[in-house]
Image: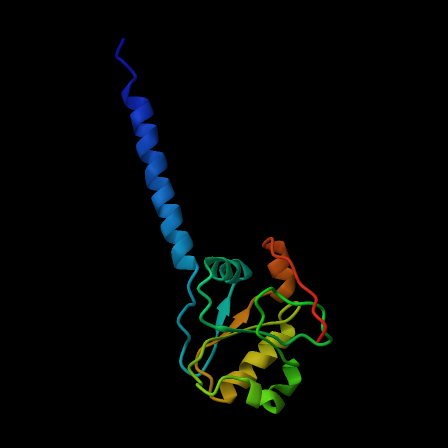
Length: 146
């Protein structure tokens, strides 16, 4: 009978390789995707959560849900989805600043990102499923008096 010392070693190598692949994928997923010219990109709640957990937030997080129903921690602005042009003075002057937009379920944020693109913003992201998807991904909402 042959010794089986190679089996545990093989298991260790397979697990180490799987861990490297998983951590590389997690880091890759935790980045803002490219935005097609003249449009916006979609962002999953899971990716948003990973970006916020990294603590290297380099985007403006905007809640556009009406009426106010809470917000994702780290939200920078609360602007009604249908009044974006009226709040232009609160948005970054630099139209290349990444803007991550969400609402409760996704319908209002979809309208808002289209408006932002029309206003000339070039790095606009729509959080698919909004706060509902955020909560499904394990995120909590905060409620602030606004």
